[in-house]
Image (cartoon, rainbow, N blue to C red):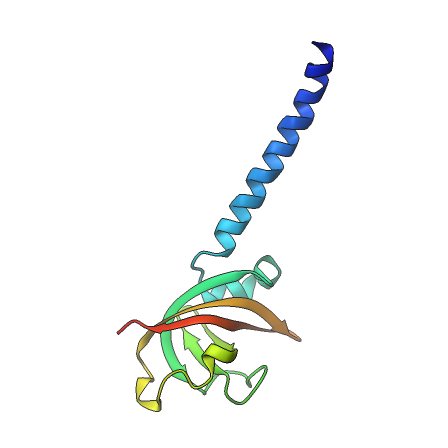
Length: 124
């Protein structure tokens, strides 16, 4: 009986740790704002997030982080560049201003935060 009581705090501690990991993973794969990403990049670095915003084409506040084909999405809280194979010229120039959804991995080049696209959709 004493052995069981000695292991109970350890089991409780390990159980709490796994719950926190699940909670972080769930938050990291959910929708976030661009403002949140830019204010706390270390919290999201290498995590998959979702952004819904307006497609802005190739004109951003700063230069593109990876290639000239990188493009910008703005969610009303800020703008961020998107890069990656599924993101290469995903929409024609006439799509500027349309609402889009982006699922991507958060990366940084120097101090610039950007997304590497996994999936991109025009919403309307």
